[in-house]
Structure formats: C-alpha cells, structure tokens
Image (tube, rainbow, N blue to C red):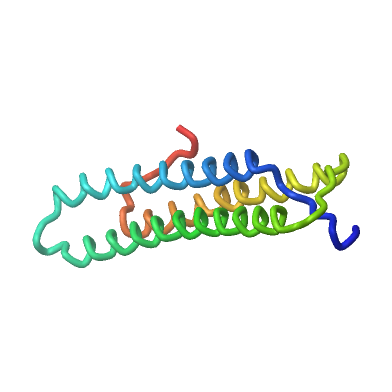
Length: 135
C-alpha cells in the first residue's frame, strides 16, 4: 500500500453496524429497565439494598451500551476524516473491500458478545429476570 492509499469502510456499513449494535444493546437495556420498574413498584422498605444494586447494574448496562456506540462513532469519524484529508483515494480491490466489511462487522460482534455480560449483571441482582435471547 502506498502512502496515499486508504482502505475506507463505506459510510453505510459504519452506520449499519453502529445502529445495529446500539439498537440491540439498548433493546436489552430497555427490557431490563421495564423489569426493574416492575420490581421497584413491589419493593418493601427492607429491600433498599436490592434496589440500589439493581440500579447499579442498570447503569453499568446502559454505560456499556453507550460506550460501545460512542467508540463506533468515533472510529467512523476518524476514518472519514482520514479519507477526506487524503489527496488520492483509490477504489478498494476485492480483498480490501472484504477486509473493510469484516472490520465494520466487529462492532456488531462486540455488541453481541456483551449481551450475556449485561444479562449476567442483571441476573445477579434480579434472579427472577431471565432473558431469552432474540425473543
């Protein structure tokens, strides 16, 4: 590769990966929030610590989702700036395009890997909350 050549991930793939990963994670987090609200309504005064733990797990889940989303956006913006700042950008060949697609799909894979982690954190504090994937 020359100094001027940049393998750029198409913007549509970045948008699809970021939106897909973020929507899957936020769907799971919103499901957990609705379950937490149901539990919160049934809490007794003696279960104050359980409510604090539930809130902490929800904040961790929401934070993980947003951090992944922001990391994807930042990566997309940095690569977009690199390409627009380059004087000569050649079209990607077949192997370079395949590499770019794989690089973009890593965002979606990381999001799917994080789902059991978020669910595990939620189940520690809410044993009755059993998530079935992709229901």
